[in-house]
Length: 269
Image (cartoon, rainbow, N blue to C red):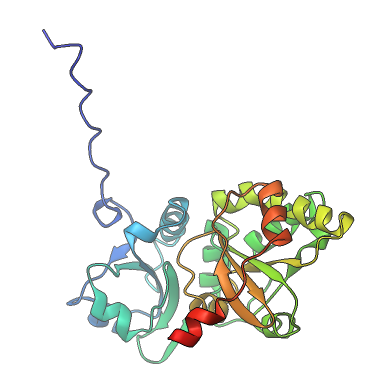
């Protein structure tokens, strides 16, 4: 008879994504180039299991691969950058997950900056050389933001508009997020309400947001590898990461008494 005081057995280890049966081809050092050189259209996800912000992403990617399983011209592949670092370095992967489109390996390569839902991947791969249109997840993200009280007070920034706001000298807290990330979805209402209440209570500063999936330059510049990541800027400079709770009151409290640049320490350095 089992001793009731014994701790329960640990849960079985999760099966790595690369070992799960699917239509996604998991590439390694030996197969990466040879596979891509033979394929007309390949969407490759470069990932690190420990940095997967949302586990649902590989499920969406796998579902899209299943959609194209009978199309010999289209393939979905993945590379674990913690195991095959030379591949990820060669194709300039700076954050996880990074998704790139390949056309016969060297003829055409570009970053995929679209949405992260199955429909987004499918629509892109139906015509990967066409201009990018508003994706399913982008539409959903806009609708989601607009449903929250105070959301109109959150400033949405892009690669080409970020520097203009930061260099204005304002006190700015920036939320880097991904539309498909559950933690981000849960934070958006509190963040939106904080922006409204800051305006009502005359608390100086701006709350801004960046969709990191659509703005890779900013994501790479600030080394965004998890979502949401919040960074505080003042007088045109990055000052510190936001490390408090994600409630409306905590956000307001942070902006009422934000961190300051430690010039003394910089002088010593």
